[in-house]
Image: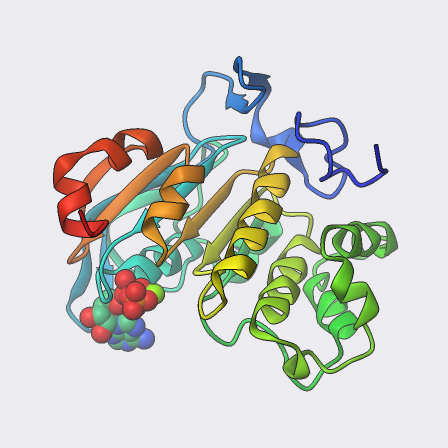
Length: 274
Ligand SMILES: Nc1ncnc2c1ncn2[C@@H]1O[C@H](COP(=O)(O)OP(=O)(O)OP(=O)(O)O)[C@@H](O)[C@H]1O
Ligand SMILES: [Mg+2]
């Protein structure tokens, strides 16, 4: 045992980095994985229709949800609207239909900043770190909404990603791709989010680094923090997903458990290379 709350695979022993109390009560299934208590998804964008500014709708009645204690994954071809769906959940889109609810509350009118205050941690696909600032300054920036002592959270982020502790005084832009993604995820964790949203956390990293990042993401999810992520590596992502969403042209093409989608002939042929 270590004192790293992420190192225990059996769940929510110490979720102090998260505010998982808001995430509903967790139970475990026979594999020891966290399962949500009944009571609806923790975060849901329901029938979201909208686009950028006055431009055409990109999303068409698109529904994405993540349950407490689970990992949900969005996959689909380039340009399908995966990042757009994440931005819609985060309040960066002009919505012409649908709703967004966080922990049972309608948040569709809130600004992105206010959604962060409500507990949304969002790591965008691009420009997700401050490259000229040090690793530690990036983490401090992540905690901008907090006025309490952030040192314990920072220590937990460093326990989760030990390489960041070694490089804490180095400019984040000098790190490798996988290390920069760790900074981005760590920065989001510094707000003690209630839900973590990651847009392609493994973009541009090697398969080994991808596996390591997935392991860390699973660890985070097992503390009780629900994770919603977009992934280009569809097969690997669905393997760790409780729920999967295949988006095509801004619409839900397939929705199901990760296991069901991996077994679905249609999904395999069209999106997983057979
Ligand atoms: N800032 C923007 N302004 C206007 N249109 C945009 C903007 N960002 C994306 N789009 C358009 O929205 C559509 C969906 O793009 P989006 O980036 O959501 O796809 P994606 O599924 O995330 O693709 P990728 O796998 O390449 O990241 C595309 O037609 C794109 O041109
Ligand atoms: Mg994208």
